Image 1: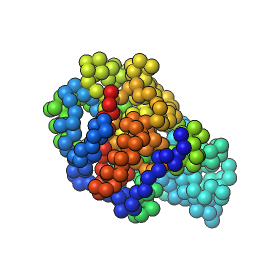
Image 2: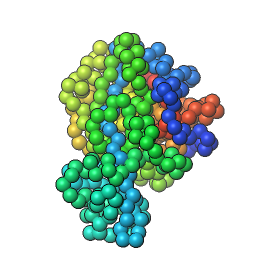
Image 3: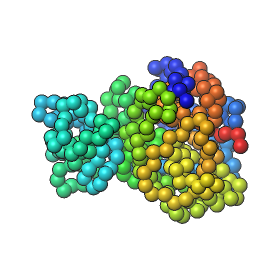
Image 4: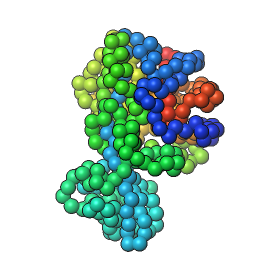
Length: 343
């Protein structure tokens, strides 16, 4: 499909620069089939059924944004994907001033060598020393806020907690699974009291999620790989939910993409550990999930393509037009949508 089919106009003031407080005070647009209802995140238990299961991503965002120097040149790096204990794939700003074999000083005693340049223009950075890279990042890195927020204000101490979900446990993400930012212990307790179960998986979101789609046709776009894991007992419980007539509702596109990567042709969710570069566009047959809670996404993005695949492009264009008209807040710190496709 042509990428411009997924375009829409978004007023600049609709981009949220801070999250709702408390987190579950955010608004939620429910799209049930083709019907739309304005609600709030706190209303979520009313929209789910006993026996349903929400699936969260327990990845933890690391301070993966680095600013350094190579000689007199300023070099910025956003880590994307771990290669091994000391090496990360990174997207580099001012890359024309960095050559393979050169070292970048990121300050606070943190240095890395540009070990290799990949075909997509990213680098493999090898960090010097013996300290765990996570320790080095805590010392020299900042939270990698999306460019549409970072371009409007500086990252601050609040972002260290605001840009982390209550489920965050496994270090490795460069971007938050933002739909889960809306959840609080109180909301989770209300969902449990309503008979709604919850499960977690791990998908380390990479910096590729921020990259624009430059191709004119979706068939020409290449997704960056991200690492994920679904434990065997988690997969078994999710399969039992559907076998009993419950629905599996992914919280965030990251959870959805990993569940679909792990699904067999008959919809059975298998244990999974490895990379996924799944790219979901209209025409895709969903196998593992029955609904999705997610934020509002960028025009022409792979994530808007995904929600259009789930609900239909016309439905999502109408839903986003409604959200814009009604003043919903967009993107990572914005409001939520609950998408329940017809089955």
